[in-house]
Image (cartoon, rainbow, N blue to C red; front, side, top):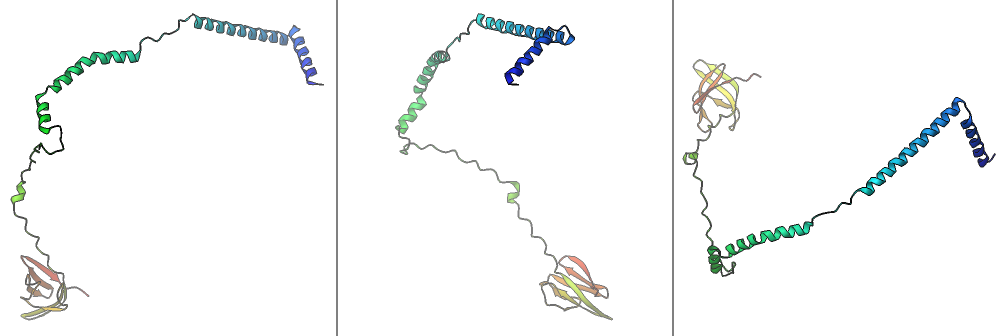
Length: 204
């Protein structure tokens, strides 16, 4: 069966069902009626829109922006001319033009510069500088202590000096800034400038 014969056969079946008084035929006729009614409504809506567009008046652009701008410029022109004339008659402008001789780069006129403002000195500027910090005592490592009656001595390593130095009461160190004031079996008491420190024996 060719395609044309198949289409003809389908059309005959559809026509037969359309003419039948069965529920399927009634549904088919009702559907075709709704489709026809929808097409008629759509056609009426399109015609009404075309009639409305045809009845509208064409919009006409009124006013010319260039002409309005030219009119506003002409209205401001007298004020600008008056300002230019007043500026041309200014005495200060005429004197400056005469002094310069219309040659501002010839060095004929020297405009004085304003003197710079020097701020006042702060209160701490006239005060003397603070004293330098007091130097710290050197590091002392006590190695041994010997106490025999009224005689006492100690062996210690002092930072910046020879190792294993023997110390007695009154021995000075650190360029004379430190001095041994007491030696006991527990350790050595030294005086560094104005401060007193106790150095204990280091355990082995």
